Length: 48
Image (tube, rainbow, N blue to C red; front, top):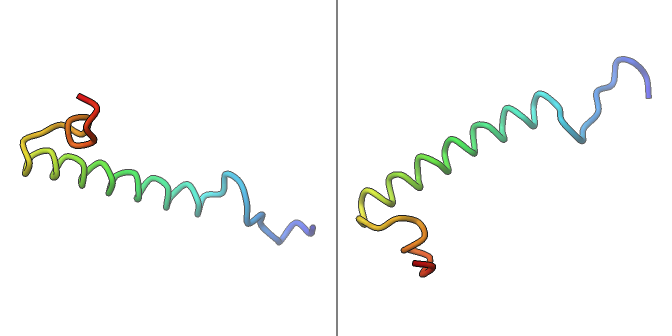
C-alpha cells in the first residue's frame, strides 16, 4: 500500500465520524421514545 492510500477498514476518521453521528441519533430517538411512551427502555423491552 502506498502512503497516499488510506485504509478503508478500522478506526478511520470517516468511520468514527459516522459512528458518533449515528450514536447521537440513536440516543435522541431513545429519549424521545421514552418521553412519548412514559416507559423506560427496559420496560419497553419487557425486562422490567
